[in-house]
Length: 242
Image (tube, rainbow, N blue to C red; front, side, top):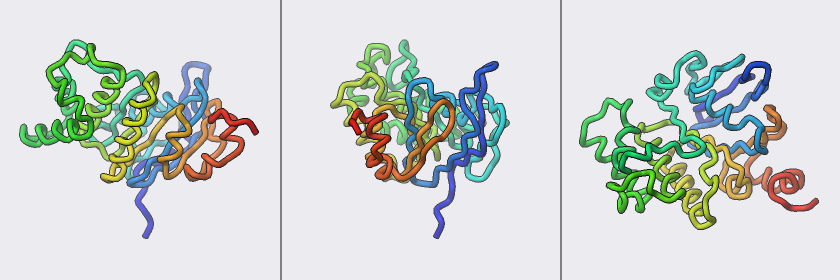
């Protein structure tokens, strides 16, 4: 039985004036997968995620989510259809408490207070540190705790497709381990995840499939294990000499 496709990009391009950040990108993400996009700084990874989320317009091509063409929809409508972005840099509301940040993540939901309470509890189960700090101002959290909060806030909208942009950026190794453990747990719970990540070793190790993005174009694709074993990928992204 064929696994349904959650996300399909058809020759998607993103431009900033004369600069083409993303060029004719075609990828697919099937239901329940972790798919990773790796690439150097400036390769177009964040621009691609923002376009999928509706935060940047497509210059050409299409974005389809569960078979529906959402290319022309604004971000808030894509959010209601189940696509949520946890952005690079976390973007927490620093002058609001941890709990208030989580509640803001559920603003688009038509849910009862009891349902929202359950979503908050789910976030606390995934990231127990947040429960301990639920009344603390988000701006006073450590970088790792802010990343946990950003991910938990994204999950408050009950996404079908979670877009994660550089969740390990600037974090200590032990926190990175916890973040990747949480990503695996979300996949095991059935969530579909598109992950952009510079920590290629850890990301490919947990990925079902992966793509390499270079100067806005997909140059290589395969299973996570295949790319992890590729000599070219190991030399370019894992710091292993050929």
